Length: 627
Image 1 (cartoon, rainbow, N blue to C red):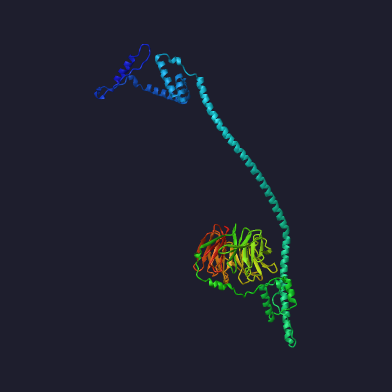
Image 2: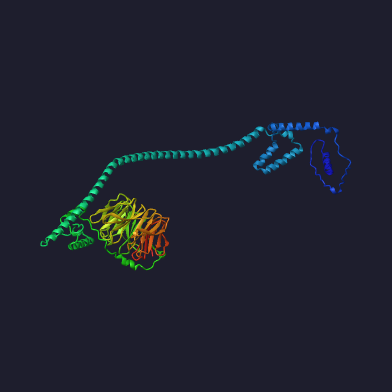
């Protein structure tokens, strides 16, 4: 420290008398503290205060003054800072240096500083002569910078305002569109409400008439029943009286014309082989003398009840010839043994139904594209196709001879197709809603159809009319099938029941209850003693026809089952499922397996005659053949 003070004193002494300053190099050496001698302070030399410093009153007064000053500073900090700080103008040299630095002119800045400080050292420039930059210029520069920033902000705001304007116009157009749409919807709603009110009023006006017609129908039905009973009693009395007269007069021979049932007077050209055989059988039984009746009254009574061209139902004493074929398929099969062998792209839309030719390896497919096609499998060669329905096809079935086809459709009609004529030969109309399924009687003269209108119909193809309408189901009838070589009809309905009907009378013989959901399909096995059905939750049930009760219930859901089929041996059941698979159930072991291959729901499934192939049709427009 002493050396630094000495150097400073020398520097001060070197200042000339004219007041100018110069730079002089001075070397400061550090002094080592090792040789420094510290002065010892005696212990009795105590620091003592003066008597005046011990005044407590003055100390308290000083503390109060300091507290008051602190309060004043806290109350007026802005005023104190305002008075304590002063705005000093910027010097010219600082302004120029800052300007050159801001512009990046470093070499010019070095030249300026060198020349400026030389002039200042030589005394040419005095600080008081230089002055300061005027506040107006500084203010203008500050305002110019602010103006640039404001212009940028203005451009950004204009851009945002333009976008907001476009969005507003778009929203206004959308608002106007939705407002017009809402008005249109309100008008349509009001129109529909008025139509509904008018229809309700119109329907209410028909209710008394419908009630009156229903009462008349019930009255006539009772009268018809009573008349029938009276007629039968009178016929019995007449027959008894004639027998008595014949026994009382043994010498006279009375010839009575015998006839049984109702015979149709038909030309030979219109009589089919089944009806011809039935007529010959009736004639042979009539000649044996059984069931005597009045020859004069019999034809009259028949003509009052039936049409001349009506067909006769065969008796339920025929043997199913396909049972022998079923015995040939009794070899053991496993449900999981089927593998995909071929895929036929047959339709553009969903394949809704399949039908197998009774004797050949030919299959017919019906589709949502309103047409059916006949294919040879497994090669997939197309043989024939038919168009005529105005809506999707729902069911198809071959004639027992294989020369005709019946189809049902969503257009409420059932059509008969003759392959020899290459087109539709008969259209049966009578259902109020879509027809879901159809089936052909083994004699070939009758067709049964099921409809969404909760009814089924039995059609006579010779007289081309509906013979019976089967009433009894409470919801849509989804499937229908004749028991082979029998007059029994099986139906399944959305009311969760199955029903057996007598086609000769149109009456329900038995109802099977047990499903918890809508029944989509049901079919017989080859022997005709077991029924399998499926519902909309994929539940399979096997029914014993004799006992009228379910034997087995298998849950193959939760996806709906669309169709079921027995193989010819009756040991395997195939299910077309809505999950895109074909499920096969081996009845002996209860093993359930799935065949994966379709890309969409499987709508129909069927076995071939030898159980060597399993065919399935799906909503992907394909038929897949499984070996």
